[in-house]
Image 1 (spheres, rainbow, N blue to C red):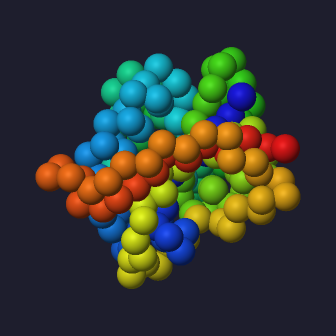
Image 2: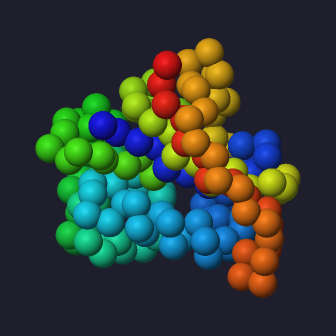
Image 3: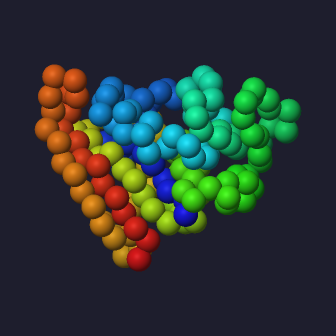
Amino acid sequence: MTTIIAAVGENNELGKDNDLIWHLPADLKRFKKVTTGHHIIMGRNTYESIGKPLPNRTTIIISRNNNYKADGCIITDSLEKALEISKTDDNAYVIGGAQIYKEAIELVDVLDLCEIHRTFNADTFFPEIDKTIWKEIKRESFSADKENEYDFSFVKYKRR
């Protein structure tokens, strides 16, 4: 199984200037919990915004630059090859960025989203979710608190 995992604003905002546009500790904690022990697939820009391989995960970076190197990571030139590399994992995760999400949404089994209930100034967006293809199967909603500035929901969609 392959899952897209992402945090999005109300208008599918993902980020701005190759960075997140919010700080939501609950989402970061959950991301770590669900992706630890798995393959994570990302584009080069996403990797560079993180800056290093994430602990206890197999990092696969997609780059068209055949000379690109990142210590401790697997480099490939296509999403299809990344998915092939990760097929031994019972649940690999696609973690961004926008172009990788756009390609992957056609190929993955599950969308695991943190929907932040606010709009943001962004330059990068998640693809529209076609509800004829995707069915919401789980939702957990949370109110803003002293650590998390915004109301948010963890929402899981499964391909119909």
